[in-house]
Image 1 (tube, one colour):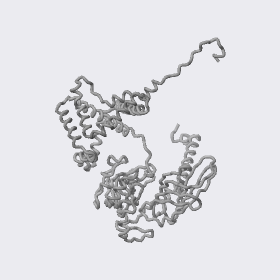
Image 2: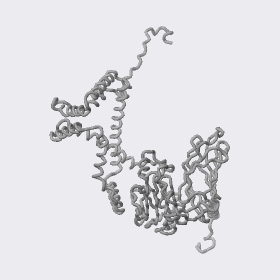
Image 3: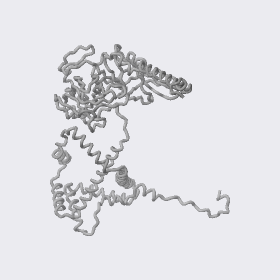
Image 4: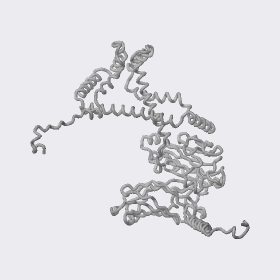
Length: 571
């Protein structure tokens, strides 16, 4: 057959039907995607010009009216800002806590409407409130309790207006109408007064720009913006499009409630795909107490684990910060509970972290075991020079010791670490961190296989299990000693404690501890064949724990049937 003949080029009708149905399916899906893009609010911000990003954290509600208790209970809030809207998740009315963060875009209408609904079999309106965003200062997080107008109760929210293109000077404050005015001296140093103990200082951060950022999308363009968080305060810069070296030149001011907090800075890409994934270009955490005032310097950006360098050509961010704070208020603040972080990432099961924690616990058990063995060797005079020095030091310490010296003893560990490790916080170059990390990762891959890691994890688990079992058994024995599980040992402990209290009343404490040291160090000479032991632990070991008590529990002996022929007794 001629391949160029018309009959040879005929395509079967069944195949043409499949191709046609496939094309119509693609056309229908394309229309749906186009319709979704036109209706979705996330894509609408690209078409319209917004003035600010309104970041809202819905925290909780209180004093809400009672609703009909029929069916499933779900309390939610609905937010509306112009054409923007958001519906929160449903929570139980008995505990109305959301802790949910979302963004709305501010256009012309600045009235934020919040409606609270209670959904059972039917929706019940609980109340509403309207917040005028034009009365809120921009670039600042506002902690608001808004009363519900058409009902009872109030809603707790955090609202921040940020992301505008306008630049705020470090010395001025931007008002709601866009006019700058000088900050009065009284308001500028308001944090220094002793009337408000929650505000201990003020932090000023100038974000100049960044360099070496890596694109997370296929196009290679970076649309970067920066997010700064201090406790529950969150501020966002505007987006600089199409460059890996963005320049923001924005200055922000934070109220500091705790000088031990850290400033978290994240550089993100505005592309919708990356925002849905939750990926960041780079992160960094800066403790407030490590800030050098008015120092303009580069900070290396890290990955999401905040341990290694982020991807890119040495990604870094240029910052200039200044922290002023009241030492008196800050010292009193550290004695109160820390501020609750409302938005936290859910905890994940981290196997390397679990392995490190188990290894750390094992090392602690090993330290106590080695310390106990070292004390035994001192008491047994295995090294006469060390034992002699230890005995002389013990007697000298308790001869000169007074009660007021106790806090000074607690200062000794700080003094030791201050002398030995005060230079360990030096900066490490990013390249050195990466090289060390790569070498360490290669060594661990070469030396440790999966089988060896599993065996090490099993060994760690058994060691920690044995240590926990020993501690639990010891605590149970002390409890059973107190509750007279073995009356003889309990009465013996009572008599010993009463005799010890009489000795403390008559004899000074220093002499008692000196006598105790002489007794411990001379036992080897009084009884050379003795076995090293601990008197108190040996006494407690005589007390049974709960498992032994269960084994000691007696069962009731059933009475035997002496006359099996009697049917009434068998019944």
